[in-house]
Amino acid sequence: MDLHGHKALITGAGQGIGRACAEVFASRGAGLVLLDKNAETLDQVVEKVAKMGGEVTALTLDLTDLDRLGSEVEKIRSAGVIDILVNNAGFDRPGTTAKIDREGFEAVLGIHLTVPLFLIQLLLPSMRSSGWGRIINVSSIYGIIGGKGEVAYSTAKAGVIGLTKSVARECGQDGITVNAVLPGLIRTPTIENFMAQRFKDEIIADTPLGRIAEPEEVAKVIAFLASDDASYITGAAVPVSGGWGM
Ligand SMILES: NC(=O)c1ccc[n+]([C@@H]2O[C@H](COP(=O)([O-])OP(=O)(O)OC[C@H]3O[C@@H](n4cnc5c(N)ncnc54)[C@H](O)[C@@H]3O)[C@@H](O)[C@H]2O)c1
Image (cartoon, rainbow, N blue to C red):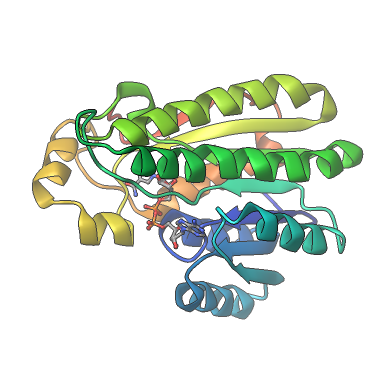
């Protein structure tokens, strides 16, 4: 699962699954381009990865500012091909169908669908030219089972699977694989700080492995999908959920 000689752009790298991806990818030799809107947490990740000897470029920006995102990524890309893209950044706006407002719904679709599509459009041409590329999109188990009070998030995460499979069909002939991971309940700062314990307990009760996962357990699957060891996997939606949602 060696990633030497590759450069990975990871969104939402300041904490949680994105941070774990940065650390696992660095430990396997990938150069990194890390994006997050939180400068403080992103700096901490950069410091840690740099100490591991990794080559890292960091950008603090709101990914939904597509004009800025496009021009900043173009600048970095002109210095060398980015051949791995991890579309990880995301957030939730909980709400039932009756309660969700259009602003919340569109914000969730924007970060999970519009931003990944934009980055894919930006990076695909150079992946195609180099004849090798990996795109891994972070979906969720909610994308296949739906979630009560999670109408925007579940809709967006189902869309991530459709996006993944469509792009996989388009660029399989170009040496590029495109896959999605579907995490279950993962111990990230957002889950620790904002999800009520009773919801966590409900999910764990429905999880055959009977526990929450650590972010590294998702990051290692993403790193596998990014490696040559996963050369014959594309268009897959891989659950990393301890069996929840099977
Ligand atoms: N934690 C879980 O249990 C779980 C389960 C299923 C899916 N996921 C998905 O995994 C991904 C990562 O989840 P997490 O729990 O690590 O999240 P998190 O909230 O802990 O971290 C997300 C990171 O993304 C950044 N981010 C969010 N919006 C941004 C924006 N507009 N511009 C720039 N940066 C932005 C945040 O600053 C943060 O650092 C998300 O797509 C999430 O939906 C998580």
